[in-house]
Amino acid sequence: MQGKRKKSPKIKKVVLLITPSREHTRGLLNGIIRYARIQSDWSFRRPIAYRLPKSGQELLPVLKEIKPDGILMREPKEIMKIIELGIPTVAFTYSRERFPKIVNFITDHAGVGKMGAKHLLQFGFQKFAFCGFDDWWWSRLRGRSFALTIAQAGYEAFIYKLPRLKSKITWHKEVVIIADWLRSLPKPVGLMACNDDRGELVLEACKIAGLSVPQDVAVIGVDNDKLICDLSVPPLSSIVLNIEKAGFDAAELLNRMMKGENVEKTDMYIKPLHVVQRQSTNTLAIDDPNVAKAMHYIHKHAANPICVNDVVDAVLLSRRMLEKRFREVLNHSIHDEIRDTRIEKIVHLLSESQMSISQIAQTMQFPCVTHFSRYFRKVKGISPAAYRKLHIRD
Image (tube, rainbow, N blue to C red):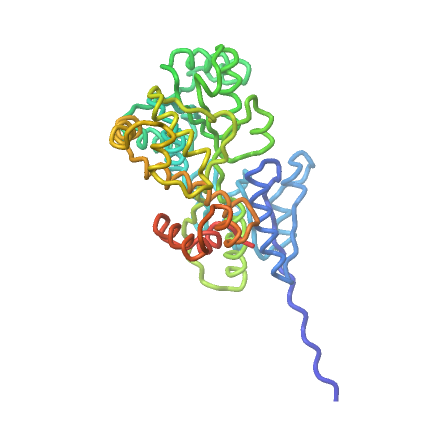
């Protein structure tokens, strides 16, 4: 007697309402795809009514016809009506912070602003500015966090205000207004843009204003959209968000919901990972020549196991005097700068490279993996392997 054939798993129809037009959304889709490869029962639908709104089709009737098992979406204009369909849904928010009755993936905008501020503070700037969109909630949150972090370091941040006349908010008109604003700022100034698009506009405004980047104005953006960052002149430094992991985690959550699990409708956060430094912030705005020389030495030898005495020898100033000047200029010690610079490089290697933990330990010239892990855990609170697993999905 032949055994019964195993039933094939029911194919789950997952609708993707995400346009792969930018680095942000492409990253989300890459994470979703990575999770979908683990499954054998996922089939994607990308309705033409969403991809080509002028197709003549309406999205809502198309969704009702498809009868999807789940939806992963950015923010289609019919979002509230889609939510009311009661289909398991996860949204990556933008225009609003969150939507009711579904799981929302929200960028940690406060963390983004803080990371931007810390990146600029490390170069010794004492004047700071933020250029964003004060009519967008996420930009305001980034700006507030940036200004707060700057204030905690003892400085003030100048915040750009959008023109009152909406007719002025066009690329060719506003770039001139931003140029005038940049001329009014004290120099040198470390400036954070709310995203890479805004950073690109600021760099163009610097040209109009006759300001050098990064000597007069150092600029950092957000999203690390490589096309925008590399097309900018000079290339734009940018904050990397943990986008692919967010896409993976969202798909994992949706799968649980489609299986009938009771998933709490809560907020999930997309964290900033690190800064990819390019020419737009490749500078030191430090008046003290000895501190500047020490900083240059530390950053140049970040992969080496240097100590405070190595920095002192490179500067030819007494340790006591150099420590005193470090405290006065940067509000932290030489040891703090060495540690933070090395950790930043390690984080970049863990997040951006395919190197093994042992290879990274060797690159950073630690005597063994155990010592490397202990060093990293002391600063970050978790092991290098746990950090990589938390931030990057294989």
